[in-house]
Picture 1 (cartoon, rainbow, N blue to C red):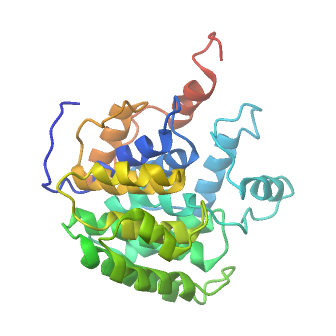
Picture 2: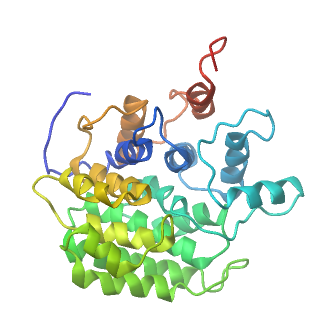
Length: 311
């Protein structure tokens, strides 16, 4: 990709690349946050919407239950319960949320950036594929709403207010949804409270949020950290790094990517051109995926190496 830098909107096409960069960290490849987001992206490019059963089936393939060769990199805390319930024939809904219920909604924020009702519906479906609590669905909608807001040039308290509005929409839409439970008002209240500290340094926002690592509260904290418009957007990642919180780095990188567009990332990213092309198609609303690499083959090579190789 040719290097370029501009604060001109790119319809969020760079958010997925940013997510992969943040999820990669210092490793050789990105982890399960980006992997699950790619599954959602392919769902959108192929079908125009997210289906919970298809998402679960893709997750089973990534876990490798059918082949014995796991492709999913990282072990989210809900995964063991999901696998156990899948093997016993029950609906695989975990009960312990992590940030991946939100990061998987990043492509939804690009695809449905002009359709808030569809954004909320698909965010809830993507969350429900593995989780039954309403707060997970709300966190997913908040992250998708944040990415959508960035594509429309929103920043600061306006961006957070828009994400909060989408979060309330998700809370209402899941209130009487069969199989969903819990009260997301505490999560929404945190986002409302943090709006007054937007612009403070990330360490201060983290203290005020009280967000534990990889929690839904961390999603809210990341939105507040990433909301201000910076003359040097990548400086957000520099300010977040001393916190030693990879969960925040992943989400903030997605926000930065959505803001700066498809420019060359400061560090190399595995399969960067793949992520860039998927981002372009999401931004264009192009339902074209058959000419793209098979996502499971891509993850197979990253996890186990090329056929006949050391993996």
